[in-house]
Amino acid sequence: MNLKRGFTLIELLAVIIILAIVALIATPIILDVVEDARKSAGLSEANMIYSGINNYCATEDVKYQLDNNYTRICTSSMTKENVPTMVNLGNAEVLEIEYSDKLTWLKVESNGHTYSLQDNAMVEGDLEKPEAKYAVGDLLKVQVSDSETQNIYVLEVNGDEIVGILDRNLPGGTVAWISIRDYSSAGGNWASDSDEVKNQNLYEFGPITALAAMNERTSSWNKVTKKYLPEAEEILKLTEYYKELESSGETSNWESKYFTDFYGFLQSNESVMNCSSGSECREAIIAAGGEKYILPEWAAINLETTGDSNAGKGYWTKTPANLSVVSIPDLAWDVHDVGALSYGFAVSL
Image 1 (cartoon, rainbow, N blue to C red):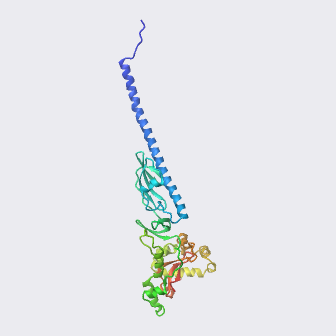
Image 2: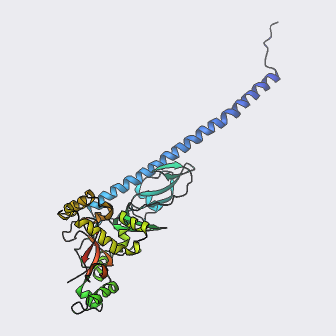
């Protein structure tokens, strides 16, 4: 008799155990593949949101240039609630967002994972927003009002506060440091005051006319904490010459030193004295070895006009001239169009 032999119980148990072992090995691998796919899809979605916001803001910039009345979303007031208007979020959620002149911070949750902006790309992880780091001379687009931005170069960083200088003069025409009318209104008498009294009054009154014009032309700038004319020494600190004074401990006498050294340098170089324009003179000064006396180009770039033919090339500081240095009572420090400090007539009609 020929009987077909089946599996014994022990053999069946062995097969079941083997299958169980295979299942234990395979299941985590399969789950890891699924999870990696979820992470990859989430990262892709986060990057699409990042790109979408940037593209939307770039389009807004063009629209604003064509129409200054266009109301923009891409401002420093942007919140995460604005994002659905700009880009399709799908199943993702924007957790945090920050915008200045560009998208500086973004955190997105997608597929159960968190992604953060790092080095201009989204990466996996719930990262902390990095502290903003700006250097002197960096150009920032600053939201000065609800509907207006200005390009500003960084002069100084004090914690969360940035002190900067505009990249060009404001339109509206040139103004006096202080007009004779404002001098008289402040209590002086230009016709009868002695030179010593005039000089003392200029220090006391300050650049009344220039400050009034600045405040009028920036009256809508409600997002700027403080507006002021810079001190002459504050501007001179941007030169290599001032650094030499610091190393030799002579900064307290900077007016006399700068006046003597720089103007002596100019008079001893014929090529500089014969130049005919600000840019030509700047090049001549550099060629003659006087680069240390002048400001970096970015600090003088605001000497460009704004399309207003009366805007002028130069800007006032708030520092009147030291009478003991120049012996003339109606001068104040300004920035000349070569990018150097110079004396300008402070008082005019």
